[in-house]
Image (cartoon, rainbow over all chains, first blue to last red):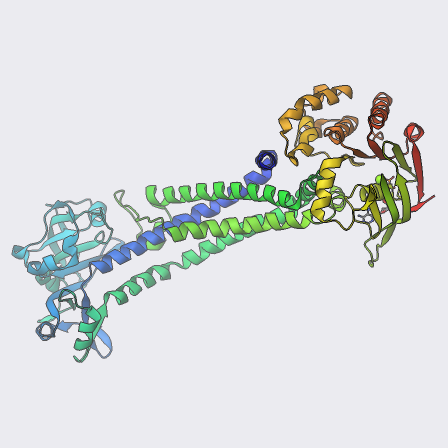
Length: 396
Length: 220
Ligand SMILES: Nc1ncnc2c1ncn2[C@@H]1O[C@H](COP(=O)(O)OP(=O)(O)OP(=O)(O)O)[C@@H](O)[C@H]1O
Ligand SMILES: [Mg+2]
């Protein structure tokens, strides 16, 4: 019995060499399709991990002020009220917004330097320079992300000019640059003191953008939030809500995921189809001949299984390797602009790439299962017809 | 002994192109004989041969080997029976074009529990007997029709089967090779093999122990 299986194996592998065009057609199609889809999936998983990271460093609760149902500036006095709520450990004022430099948009975050240790940003490591401290309040000092430093070609010690909405140019002094070792979360950030941010964004007196609330150790943030909800005109965001927001943002850009999956499925379907029509004809004769000589129906299925699995695993694995290289080493040119909305990337930029079990599994599934179905099922159908008919119909 | 009882084969039954290829044929083929099926083109020789060799299921009738009906046996049983007992030469030769002559000859071994490599010597020797040893390593698609037929002939005999079914084994070969094939078939019979052929070749009919004439699907 064992020898027979060895024969079947060697026959199958031989087939792959003999029917070279058929093997190459499958490998090339699968390679291209899986390279694209795996690059996108790996990058998407990476970006989602980033989203999770940025949420994990976000405050337990974010409190916004609603005016006529829209988010508006929140009075600083709210911070006192909230800090008196049972379970609240600390409240940080925050003013933030966006600023454009060239064609890119960056995030400006203003925090009270003395409270910085509390904010998740302080957990990010620096590539050079120092972090903000109490003396930096209103001093015009900033810490910028890697991406910005790369694009503007600046480093700690340099100055940079930012244009506010009212087109006032304001000079800032860079005291530090974030590292992007553990995350790209800080890559497009400009962190300054609350005072500077309030001035830059021309906030009304006694107003900030929102409040960062940290609850006492061991408490569930949502429980504490429930106690605040009685306050008028506030909206309270917890981390779950933020995460959903981030993921929705990627999903919106992610029309591309649907498009790519469609391309992959079409490619696989095409190959499957050509298998069934062109190769099916050739292989019908072969199956009839094998059965005549005493290959059983199961033997025939075994031959096709070995062929398809070998080709499928080889091409798909290679495709994933290419996709990984494309995303992780070459930063997915063409793809990254769509995913991140950045037109220009400095060479220092590294696209976050995560290879998850789910992605790998679904890529294998979407390529190998159709291949198996379209090769094994026809082989089985041919194997259960009379060998004479299988050979005769194919020969004519 | 092979016995056919009231065998009928109707292709495409119930369709516009329904063809009664073999109608109610009964015959007996004794062991250790050469038996020839003859008749004009389209009379059903290939169809009959295919049914006798269990690669085509009759529409009705029974086929017996050594007195046992085999048609109701499972597909697997028939496959194993073919594997262990039959050698085939097809009218359309049916070699795998992407493989060499030697590889084609060894193909039947792959279905068995034996090592194809062990048959190489025997295969080479047999190819040599038919004068095509030097073609052993050539792809089949590069061989002439007569050379291909000789390869097919060697493939049928490689496992030294008990029954040999040969559909017009001499149509494409020259006189010289025909003579070798006659000698080989006779020798096989003398060694105790049973040979069933279909042919128009008068010489082949002469050396047959029995000849069944067919006409329009019936015994003539
Ligand atoms: N698969 C098929 N479907 C329909 N009709 C068929 C099929 N195979 C054979 N026939 C028909 O059955 C008849 C017998 O064919 P068969 O091949 O058995 O004849 P033959 O005696 O071998 O002829 P030849 O000497 O030309 O090889 C022919 O009329 C043929 O057209
Ligand atoms: Mg015929």
